[in-house]
Image 1 (cartoon, rainbow, N blue to C red):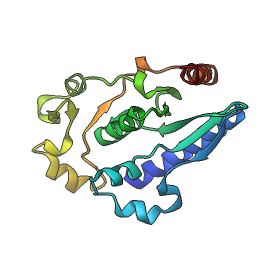
Image 2: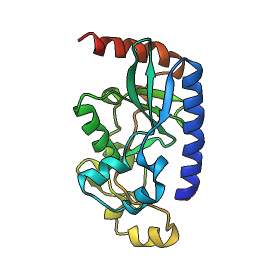
Image 3: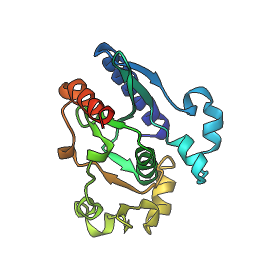
Image 4: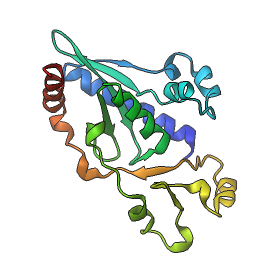
Length: 193
């Protein structure tokens, strides 16, 4: 699937997710500069300074609930993997006291708070492939660009990003049907600290 096809699929999932959340009583707004200034964000595609990364990897939405609203970020993921740079940026948000929920569409609309999501060790993922097909693991992340085959892969699939990634451990995710009760409980706990 090409990058543009993945974007269309992700946008469709994001809309369905936000609609479902609104039906549950959440107020939801799209978040991020890519929604207001797509050309600006597109120009930052290869930028690696912290400000550019924070702009590029802003969660997809923000949500609030309650008479005195409590809010949190929402990231809608169609993939079953997380890119290293996105993971690091999400943790920077969390490190500043923000609440971030990640919902995975391809994993059956399963979700969790960022701090409760576990990643599959990269070496476990690569073991499923024959030695000649395995990508190298660098600093615990599967790194396609580090492969001797990367030039051939990119020639045959120009849309391949080669970004370091890891799989999400689906066992660390919660069922969607419990989303509202679990997230409001967690927001109450945070507010009462």
